[in-house]
Image (cartoon, rainbow, N blue to C red):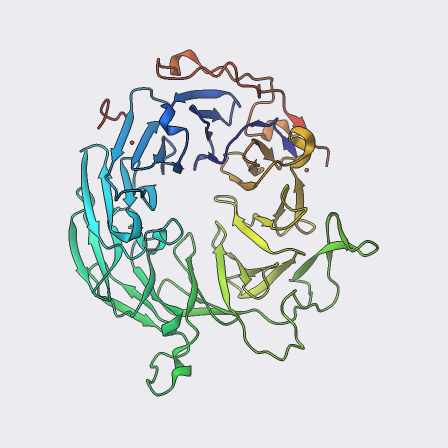
Length: 516
């Protein structure tokens, strides 16, 4: 494994979607660092009133702009051009701020959700016009993403609203976001909607409190399929026939599969013809075999404490923590997490009543391929965005703050990655986060931050410097002059000067019109 030196970070620091840059919001500036050179290529000076109260800091879909939301103002900056600065200011009720702010379908669109679900404002940065849509059903940072969806390819907006106790789905035009059509779906309390990856179907699912129900609709509101799991025709006289409800719904990247997880231990896979193709069952016990690997985190039994991170391969049947074959209760809390990898062949899942275990399924063969058991609850399980069969896992609890685990089918169990030794003082100083870094090189790379410093890691083998996504020579934090304007802040005094890479032997009013 190869680590870079640590760089100055903050609670608002993240890599771009294309993996080429890392943006960090500091008290007086935004720094844009190139992953390839590890140099700061742009520094954006900020007004003093932007130094606190930041509610959003996000990259645009194409990685060319960054958004900073403070109170009722949203600033959009170009990553490389000094000529563009967009400012959106939407009046809010006194003593309130937007509930959620994000880019729209493109870099030229900003979506602002008002508090308490009053309205959604979609602002076009090119035309300087805004469209207001009342009563979005979901508006918080957690729930808003599942209440709106942009159709792949055409960028039409589908929005779930609620008025007079009824759900409404509306489709909005591409350029003005004016409503084109709307309808009342056959739901009682819809919990989300989403376009399939190919844009063919708009999928809507009801609340688990009203049973299992998923509607596959056309763009004009015709429900082609009303899927209710095992109970296609529930009786009002038998409440048991309503099912346990949808807890998670996810699509495979290639659009071929839709995975629906309910309140039981089962995941149902529907194909692109909307026919049930596979049912995956989480069993109380799992037994290793030639096609199934079971990995358990190892403990030092002498002290009862977790030793240096390591995993052992189970040789006999085991029960994941939280699932007991001898339990007198038959209540299962179900599966609320399921994600496909980039190849659409593997599916990772986690049961709510076994939060420390990840199950990895081979969807085409409907077989369980691996079970990863930890001694702490899993807080993140993230597939690599482009490299198939590569999973990142993080856990909560003491001793796990500086750790991440990388797994692939050919590895000897989850591969522990310890970041603290590469940070100042060889320790983390606060909350931590780790995520995959999209790179063009084959060995995957990671971004890790403790909100004070961040470092990058490549999983390339020691000695394979050619495969690294960044340069191996000594670099500095001096930005190129051609990319600095009079409004930019010089970063010569930043204390965390770039040094050579170390290796581990073993791990958006406008000032000017937008430019392309």
